[in-house]
Length: 185
Image 1: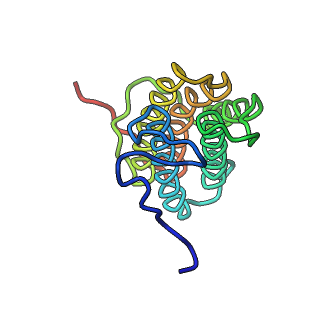
Image 2: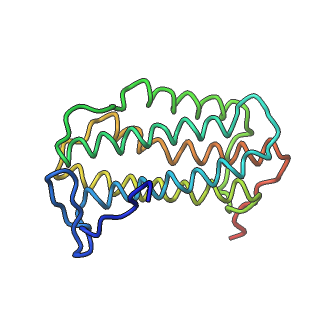
Image 3: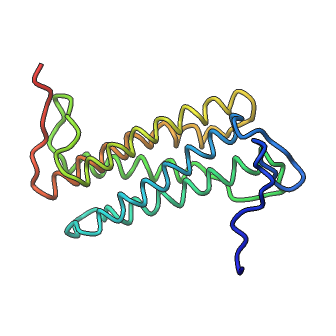
């Protein structure tokens, strides 16, 4: 076997990283797992976005950047929790880049005056699921911040991420010429 995909050490409900043992239901592993789930889902969104026409904003490239930044957040959390030396860190420029993406998309879209029912297109529906997973991951990271010193940049980024995914979802509908549906209540 070229790659060892399992060790069996976690069969009792604990993960071993280096010399540190941690329960699989810990706040840290909940946060890391939620970030992993989000990143995997964004990969599915990115793959679905490959069929979109290329426009002012490259949706697949924007999602790829977000995925990279989620990896940085995971690494930053792992450094804190598993006491690794060093590692990449999210910084203010990552947050500013996400905010700039939201502003750039907003400038291209008609104003939002009502709630939007998810599902106008397959790509936007996938991104709306990603938005909810981003909120879940944010809640898990906030819970972890009670126990660990999570950087303000990470907390800010996680707070903006669901907004960015909502903006990207609206943008994909816009470039496909798909009308957004509103609740009928």
